[in-house]
Image (cartoon, rainbow, N blue to C red; front, side, top):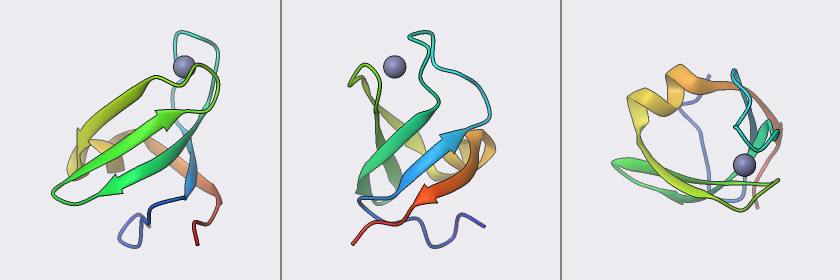
Length: 63
Ligand SMILES: [Zn+2]
């Protein structure tokens, strides 16, 4: 479940980023979820609903 998404979490997405990366770190949680690609550093803001659609599994929990 993604109800408990937290800043610092690392999530593996269902689809690979064009740079080749799969994992993203959460840097902001609010109405929108801010994530940064671990491979290329690209930052993206997604509506929570969209994040939930794209997220696969959490691979590391934030502090
Ligand atoms: Zn990337």
